[in-house]
Length: 390
Ligand SMILES: Cc1ncc(COP(=O)(O)O)c(C=O)c1O
Image 1 (cartoon, rainbow, N blue to C red):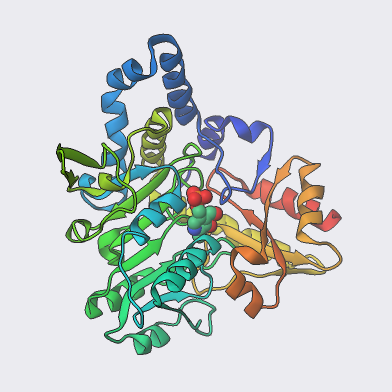
Image 2 (cartoon, helix red, strand yellow):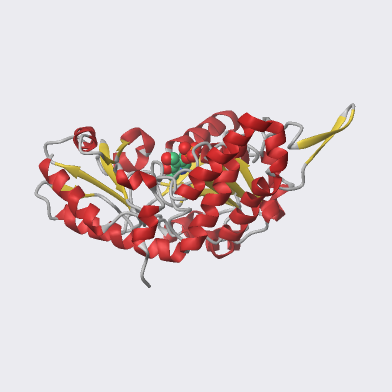
């Protein structure tokens, strides 16, 4: 299958200004997404915020249908919140743990999630255990299977970590969670938008994602999926008049769907833009996006690996569009600064974002180049020349 790169780049105005290998930070907005956001902001300015939202009701609602068709779930199982962390927190802090029970997580877990585990461990006495990696550097399915017992109350893992190309075997984790009847929370912040994600195939009960990364949506948007069977058992940590109804002076009723984790006020233009971004990704096809992105990332790994002093650091059997590396004699910050002078964007992954994994590998920081389908083979070559020159 051929990918119409010329069109993808034509519809991505940022391509003319930067070589953007920071898609795991924030993808460049496509023109239709930009138009949807700015169009709604203009209507807010001209007509009034409430009035503009009422007129755009169908466009706002579209995001639920778009997200549910992308993830293969019902639209009532989708909530739209401010970011992936808020989505994750709303579900996690709605769960109840007690002393002596266990939460199983992974080595490459994201700092915000791990801090939440530690906080809840302090207040409840629940034990947090990071499952060992296998020989590929991904969650060991065997170790996970061996760790299961009646005390395990949650399996909570990151699909693609912030600090590398690793794709954890989510469907195999889901199979174990299902057979043991343990809720499975999947942080898919870095994977949604770059590969097909099907919550039925994976078998997760909660999934969280962000709008701004591989989905190329607006900043300040996050997606929460909660399986319908679980919703009623989760008491949101915060409620407002959108999440619940004040039914009598002394009573309230919480919404029956995943919107119980939302709140009333929000970024309406962002919600509209996120719906357009998901539809735009679907227009290219998540499978086609995945194949192209992986192909570019493998080319980047191969070419970086040929540069003297450069070590590519990605783990896992399946590797995605995120490429991490170090270079002898330069810190990742040096590399980022030098590349920025040539209008090349990358990110730095510091140790404190994925402490368990970085400590185990003796790494302090990594340069992170994350490609997307609208990047080109020519950009990969240009990028590697620039890294060589650092
Ligand atoms: C694995 C992972 N989880 C969660 C997040 C948080 O996403 P957000 O910034 O949208 O809250 C990130 C952000 O980089 C991430 O890499």
